[in-house]
Image (cartoon, rainbow over all chains, first blue to last red; front, side, top):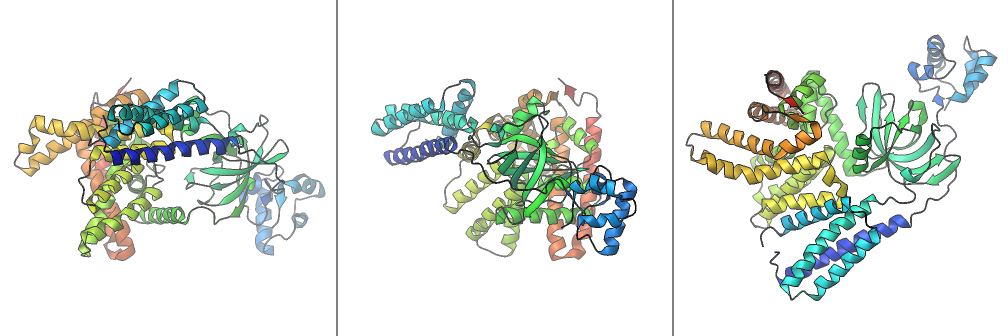
Length: 109
Length: 465
């Protein structure tokens, strides 16, 4: 069926041996690849960056509506950014109660 | 024996096919493979025994690769148990070019660490991330993101994703749930290919109307997102949608353009071929290395290599090499519609077209103006015959208009693609020439849309099965 010379047979068998050995090695690598426990890698995920967020992203935070998002952006542009989340208290409409409600969803980097 | 690779590829495919039906442990198939390898080695001087052993060895190798592809490592992302509805945090690297759609960004993330059920673990595997806002992310960016595993995907879609090596879909609410870590991961070559792709997209959108730019992006870059829905549907109906996919046709055009350009520079033939090989590889990466473009690139490289070593290229062996390359990397691609359609159409053209040409006496036609349309019609007819069964099975449609539609659409698509590549070159080398190419593209794209719409609306153009 194949009509190969002796040299060709040797080459083909070598290639097939490599392919078979490769599949076996890959199988073993999969079997012996346990999942290792590592340290937690983030605390800030899900927090909206006050210095980068656009209006719609700010509005995705529960407790921030369209008007408040607009005021935050205006404050950010005026003051050239936020240094701390606490600066939000300087914005009209953010009372102590509201600040407590939204502060965990925000960050200022 | 002339077609050794072609026969080997067929036996390998048969092995994969059989393994998909029979559930046998991996180690058992592997031991059988080793046994046949030993038999083949010991009977190297006896042709009959050697051939039989070789047949079974290749068959079993196909089965071994398929069985191995189904085994996932214990640290694989799909093996991790998630609490229903509970979000999980994943750290990983983007491994494709993110696709931006209206109000959505989708990309594939190679996971490295996962944080779920208050446990942080190393992991592996690819995840399809669907971010519910538009965000400019890039290939090679390392991210930490939080999202919920999507368990609502249909069975067919999940099977399709699994064949592509994706075993989890993760929905991310908005960009606040993504932290960008490092932007310089990934391969430099792939990164440059995607950067060039973005630049070309920008050139198209700068000089062309949205509809024409969308069509050209699909034809030249393999990006179908911006093709207007109505045009896409009419092309599906007329069976001409293949022109919106980067395939052998585009790879051939890229080779042709660069070989011609290098010839103008008076480079020797061998040097031209050597330069074109990396260009084709780069183009393959740029268009996302899908099955059709990978097949075409390997076949083109096979032909060029044959010319370089002054050997007669064998088309059956070249297509077999392409199939083996794709299947060794991922044996489950054998069951992918794209793989089957791509190989079926090329095989049908290779096998049927010369016979039909002889039967119709197309070669005897003296006038090229008469001969070319007849030949084009026969090529289109051969591809239609080859893919008809697959299209009916997967898409439940039968389009008798396909052959006629392709005769009109393919020349226009060729013109658009050629002008598209020329537009890119002109915008980089000689910008004043850009309007000429842009206008030609607009005209040809308008004609293509009109032609496709008229054909789709003809009675009995398409039947839904």
